[in-house]
Length: 174
Image (cartoon, rainbow, N blue to C red; front, side, top):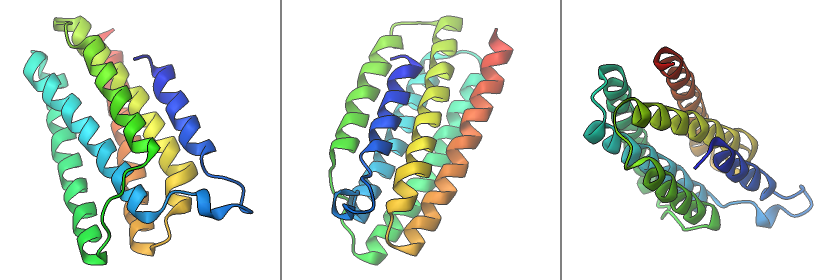
């Protein structure tokens, strides 16, 4: 999937947040938790694929950081959900994220070497940008619980950092 696919998804998530006159259509905290967990799962699945396919040390290092960072973030959000007695709830956004991610990984799954590394990094750049946009424009503003809002804000910073690191690595591969 191209970067445009992820950006379209971010736009759809952002637009799903209605005008203030219709607050009931905004995602609920349980839906936000599911979306956050889904985004982390997607990045971890892509990182596992990169670790299995890539032979580039820098790309493998980046993939390892994705696993560590998103694993830690998932543990934090799961712990918060358990403490607040919130059960993650499916939403159209989390389902769309999974479908798009599966298609994206299938697109570059048969690639090897430099071609795989470049496609993986470009995908990470686009995905991180899309998730950061969704977090900043929709999910953080819609979160009702202050602890969840704060944790999502940390996730926003993490996705921006991952995007910047992927951009730096991609530029090195050119």
